Amino acid sequence: MSEPIAVIDFETTGASIGQGARATEVAIVLLEAGRVVDRFQSLVQTGAWISPFITQLTGITNAMVAAAPAAAEVMQEAARFVGPAPMVAHNAAFDRQFWRAELERAGLPAPQPFACTVLLSRRLYPQAPSHKLGLLVDHLGLPRTGPAHRALADAEMAAALLARMQHDLRSLWQVSEPDHAFLSHLQRCPARTSLPCWPVAPSQPDSGPCGPVSPLSPASPRRLAPGLLRALHRPFLPVPKTRPWFVPVFSTAHALFAPAAGQRAGRWGRSGQACTASTFQRRSGSLRRGPGLISPFQSPCTEPRPSCG
Image 1 (cartoon, rainbow, N blue to C red):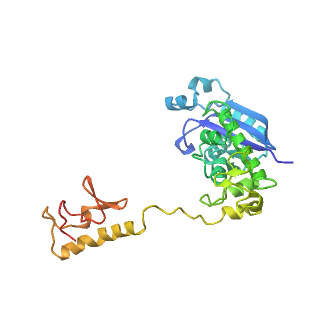
Image 2: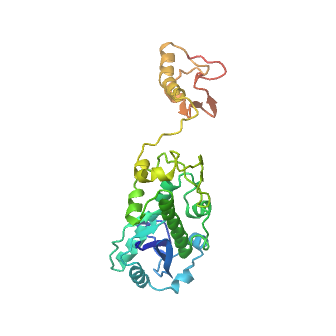
């Protein structure tokens, strides 16, 4: 029987505990065997002021939290709801810091390990145009359950994303039990890896972004499943840049040695000043002097006629 996983989301007054931010809302969705079995949601009264920007972003006002339960009471209920279950969040570094800080203020321990669906999505869905929660949910065809930047809606979408990841690991990679321990190990694998073809949706199991996926082809998930983690640890082969490697090298050499050579030869620009390395800088493979661009194969001296090499 699969272990329950608690998917959590906080709405807060700011981005960091270190800057004095506090929680304004917390929601937790309990996921078991890929299905939501329970939910917890509450606004949080901490006494912290909510700025107009945060109110516009989340819809949570100072009046709403003034009528909410105190933070210590909410966190006691949240800790009781989670129990020993491991936790998951989208951008877990953010939610983990508020989970631990608010529990510490309430005098409660926070032993739960965290896994991050952002880190996991970068490894499982590298072709996604974005790894933000809403855009990733849309990319995978998962339903939106409510307005963004409200804790319960975001927690439910993160839970649906986690369930989809576990489903794909079972069906495409034949991982028998993608539990929290496996996910925690997977998210620590290098992100920039060369992955095999990956079907976009379960409704199209025989097609992928690289073309048809045959059970006998090298890209078949059936053949690659036992080596999933080994595949993720393979060195990433970067796509060659369109610009030849020697252009920036030539630019750098030109920037370093051409002015000195011009000075030694006693050549001067039309401005009457010797060319020095400070008269130009390399920018994106070209040399910049004033507002104009000079080709790496031209002199950095005053145009139109080069006079120093």
